[in-house]
Amino acid sequence: MTHQQILDKLAAKTVVQNIDEDFARLTAKAMAFAKHDKKIAENLAGYILPKILLRWNCVLNADKTEVTDNYKNITVLALAIILHKYGLTDPEILEQAIKAIDTLNKNVVLSDDFFRKSDQIKQFISSAPTALKRKPSLPDSITFYRPKDVIAIQLEKHFYCAYIHKNARPNESPIIEFYDKRFDKVPEIQELENVAAKGQLYNDGIIRISKYSVSGLKFLPDTANQIKLISSDVLNPPSNAHLEEPVGLYAVMDIFEIQNEIERLFKV
Image (tube, rainbow, N blue to C red; front, side, top):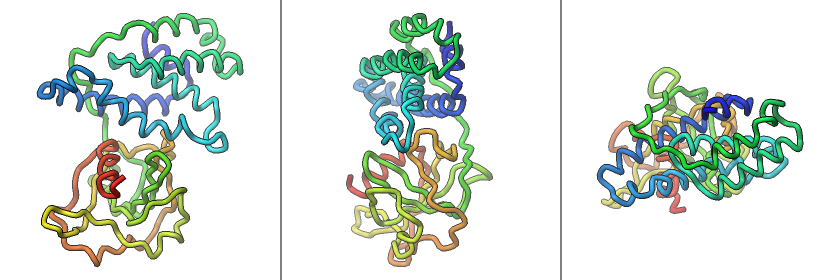
C-alpha cells in the first residue's frame, strides 16, 4: 500500500492536491533552510506544522454550520497521510486521523474498500516515516482568482481583506493589496468601501504602498477554508493616496509567507 493509494480512497482529489502542494512548498523551503540552520534541520516538522495548521485549522476548527464533520475527518486524515509521505509525523494529528478513520467508517462515508483496509491504513500511517532524500518540486502558481476580486484571509479568529489588482502572469500569482482593517467575521463588500489601503512601515519611519504577488493562492473556493471570496468585479481598489511611493512594484511571496506578512503588518 502506498500513500497515493490511500489518498485515492478518500475521494477528495482537490483537498488532497491542495494539502500536498502546501506541504511541498513548505518542505522544500525547510530543507533548503536546514542546510544552514541546525535548529530547522533537527526538527523540520517544527518549522512546517505551525504554518500548515495556521492555514488548515480554518477547516479543523471551523463551526459545524460552515464545515461538515465528514469534511473535517477527511481533511485531518489527508493531513496525516501527506505528513507521513513527506517523512514527518505528529502525535496529535495521528491520533485525530485514527479517530477519523473510525468515524468515517461508522458513518459509512467512504467505500467498502476503505472499510476493509482501515486496519492496514492505521498501521501504515502509524509506522515510522521515511525521511525525504531530496527537496520536493515546487507546485505551479496557477490561480482561479481574478483581477478585481476582493478576498478575506483568515488567521485564527480574524479576517484580513485584500484587493486583487491583477495577476503577475496570466492565471498565476495574484497581486494583492490589503485593506487597513481587521475583522472578526468576513465582511460584506459595503463595509470596505471607505477603508483605505494598508501600507508598510519602513525603518526610516515612512509608510509606503505595499503590494504582494502570492503563489499558492489557488483554489476557489479554498479547500482550506482560509480564503473567502467577498466580491468580484470590484472597480475601486482601496485608496493608497495617503501612502508614499513603494520601494518596488510588489513583493513576491507564497501563501505561507503572506501569513507572516499579515502578522507583521497588523502586529498580530
